[in-house]
Image (cartoon, rainbow, N blue to C red; front, side, top):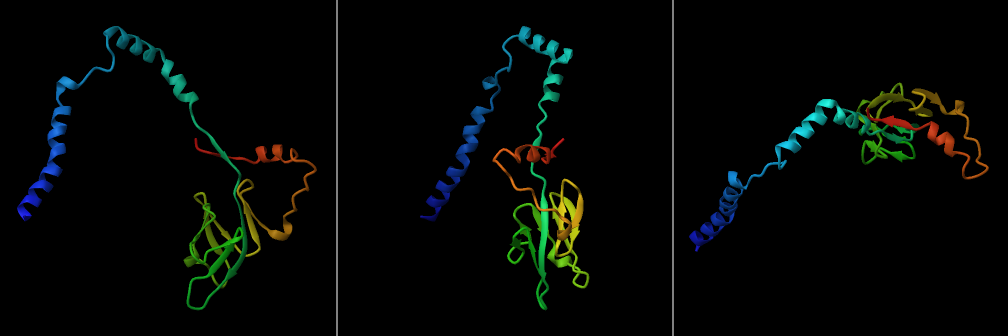
Length: 170
């Protein structure tokens, strides 16, 4: 009974090898271009630089809002890693906050209350009550930051938002 089982398993795994042998034969391979005339036309276009212009124009640029990291608090625990409150979330379950901020809780300077964090690959250090703005590339105290102007209509903030987008990519 075991030998029959071994044989069926062996046939099951070896059958694709026999089927692939027929697919790889050189008679089944075809040329990409049907005639030499078509090949020469493409070579001529390539030598004239027609494809280089298309390649340079197709660079993709992704825009996103600049990241703002608000350090709201820090709880230092006796026998465990500290808990950091950033952007209305905490690091109790995971050092990743909101998918954009990574807080290294193991390297928190407990006596200086400094918290190292990484935002989109950029390393920063914040203390509770500070805010880092990606568009300004600086750390500010919360009391120094002016509150946003109230909107009078839905279209007021559109141009401000477009001006503050951050470029990602080449």
